[in-house]
Image (cartoon, rainbow, N blue to C red):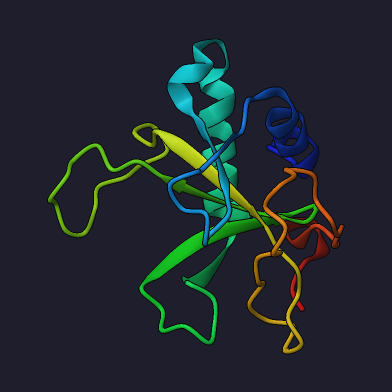
Length: 141
């Protein structure tokens, strides 16, 4: 059985999302793998889904100069990405689904160009303000 967007929705609805208070100008939330050891296999499956069904996008969003190119899963008004390099200082970082330690998410909305999603300004609520078609289920453009 393959992992679906509904599986991703079930996982994201189950785990705790903490606001990243150290980055208020880049509002996002994160969940830590070790917070829910009972959901470890679900965490790894969601990380694989982000990597398989996600798209490569620059960060930060335009017009800023890109610093990173991440794999993002766009789902129900959120963009999800993974972090947690267990081998600091190794370039490029060695991060696998099995060694990933956290998942981030931020609100997104389509830009006028319709290509690179942009974060929503309201960081007070973790509830999505827009609901877009699941990019993983919509197929190629």
